[in-house]
Length: 452
Image 1 (cartoon, rainbow, N blue to C red):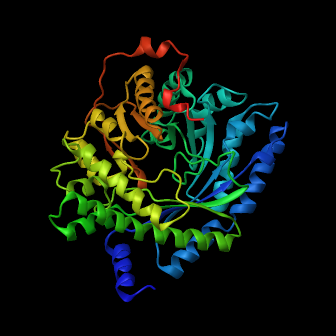
Image 2: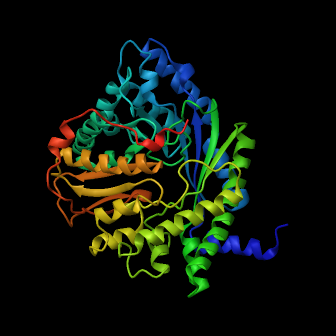
Image 3: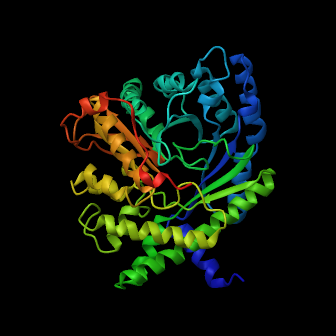
C-alpha cells in the first residue's frame, strides 16, 4: 500500500532532484514493408510508422499530465534499415532516411532510431550501402539516429567494419561541421548491441522483437545523489544498499508509465531500461554521484571502483522492481551530457584512458566525447576496436560515440544544446595504429563464447 510518505518523497524527487522518465520508445518492425521497388518500400514504411505511432506523443503527454511524471522524450525505433534496403533493387538508403524523417515529423517524436546495420560477422546485402550513406543521411535529417554493430562475444570483432566506421565518423563530422558536427552525436558504434534499447542514438528494433512494442527508459542521477547526501558518512555497504533502494523506487515509476502507455496504445509492454542517464543540468549528474561517495573529482583514482558499485547496485535494485528489465540498464557516462563529467574533463581530471577503464564496469562505453578535428580515421577506428574488445571479452554492451570537432583542437568546445549538451575537445594519444587497423579481417571470438 502506498503511504503519504512515499507520495511526498516521489514529489520531492520530481520537483527537486530531476527524476524523470527519459523516454517512451515505440519499437516498430518494418520487415513486412520490404519490396523490390524502393518507392513502394518507402510508402509502406511511412504508412506503418505513422499508423502505429500517431498517438505516441499525445499518450505520453496525457500520462505526464495525469500522473505528474515528466516524460522527456517520445521516440521511435525501427528494424535496422540495412535489412529493408537489402530487398530493394535500387539500393538508395538515404531515401529511406528521408522517409524516416518525414514519419518522425508527422508523429511529433524527438528522435527515430534504426538507420542501422548489424555487421559483427560480415557484410550482407544492403549493409555496405547503408554504412557508406550514413554521413549524407545524418546531414540531411534532424531526427534520424544511426548505429552499427561491429562485434559481439559470439562472433568476435569485424575489423573491416571497424576500419570503415573510422572513416564514416570523420566524414559525418565534416558533413555537419557547420552545426558543431552534430551528425556524429546521432551515430554510435556498438559491440553486443541490445535489440530492445530505448535510448538514442543506439535504439533499433531487433529482429526477435514483436511487431510493435513499448520500451521505457527511466533516469534519476539527482535522486541517487540526494539519497547519498542525506545518508552522510556511512560505509560502502550501506551506500550500495541506499542506491539499490533508490533504484527500486525509480524503476517502479518507470514500470507504471510503461504499463499505462502500453494499455492506452494497445501495444505490448517490452522492457524498462533502468539506466541512470544524466543531463547537462546541475544536479542531474552521474559524476556527482561518484563525488558524493567521496571522490574529489570524477576521474580521480577510485572512480572505476565507485562506478562499479553504482552500476551493480542500480541493476540489483531495478531488477527487483520489474520482471522486464532490458536495454542497457546501469549508469551512463556520456561526457557532454553530464555536468560533472564536463567539469572533470575541463579541469583535466577526466581523460580518455580513464573513461575507457570506467567503461569496463558501467553501461555502454565511450559516449559523447569531443576529439580534435584533425584526428586520423585510423585512430578513431582503433578507439572503436579497443572499446569493442572490452565488450567482447566481458560479455557486455560497449559503444563509441565520438565527435571529431572539425577545425578545433584540444581545449576548445562544441555545443549541441538540449540533452546532448556540449563540452571541451579532449586530447588523444597520437601514436599511430594505422598498420594494425589496415590488416582487416576479424578478431576471433573469445573462448568464453563457447557456452552451448
